Image 1 (cartoon, rainbow, N blue to C red):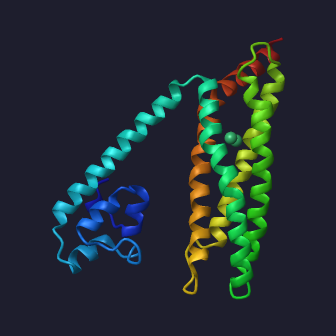
Image 2 (image 1 turned 180 degrees about the vertical axis):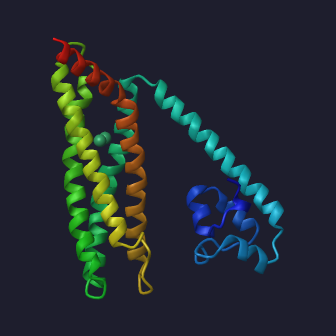
Image 3 (image 1 turned 90 degrees about the vertical axis):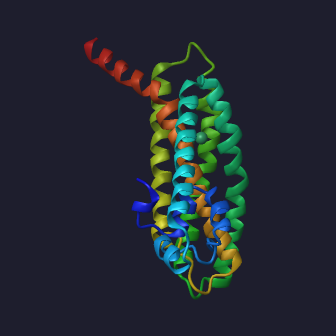
Amino acid sequence: MKYKDKNVTIGEVVVEVPEVTEVFKEFRIDFCCGGHRNLASVIEEQKIDGAALFERLDKLYENRKASYENKESQFDQMSPQVLVTYIEDTHHEYLRRVLPETAGLLTTILRVHGKNHQELFDMYRIYGQLKADLEQHLLKEETMLFPDFNEIDNNEQEIIDLTKMIMSEHEAAGELLEKLRTISGNYHLPEDACKTFAKTYQLLEDIEDDLHQHIHLENNILLKNYRKRETLFKSNEILN
Ligand SMILES: [Fe+2]
Ligand SMILES: [Fe+2]
């Protein structure tokens, strides 16, 4: 849908199409502190040429969509070995860097704001679980699942069992992310939030985004053939 037909805030547009900030700067639209404002009302208040602005926004949106679709088809065409290397170099590397950093920040804001924002205690506990789960999960993939893609004579049943375990861990991680989002009220910053608070929420949202893409690549592209094989394997088992 075109932006002009949507009832969106400035912040929502930036999340969808991050490169839009350049256009907002040009039209003198405040996307930082004013990110919560409705785009249509800002256009009216600041007497902005709406048609010109929407044309630019829609173009950026279309470009982003096209490049996303292009990238998706590239992933689909990658060999499992190449895709595994890509996942390790981008998503695993990212998590190893950002998980401890976020844990440190969360401890800091818990110490400073925990008394007034007790939901942070729950967030701390759930994030701790997510971090520990993911750290062992990455190792499980790197030492058990991924090497299987290089072996020709691997045990089919073993891979199927491992795939199931990996996918159920993905689901568990997704549920923890969902809990964090709910407890934080969609990462809505309280009035008294300091810069560290904002940075922590930003990192948590980035982790969520990255993890969604990471899990999508593993579940829907890397493991999809195994899932097909599982169905085949099962039907053969029944026939035998
Ligand atoms: Fe992974
Ligand atoms: Fe995974």
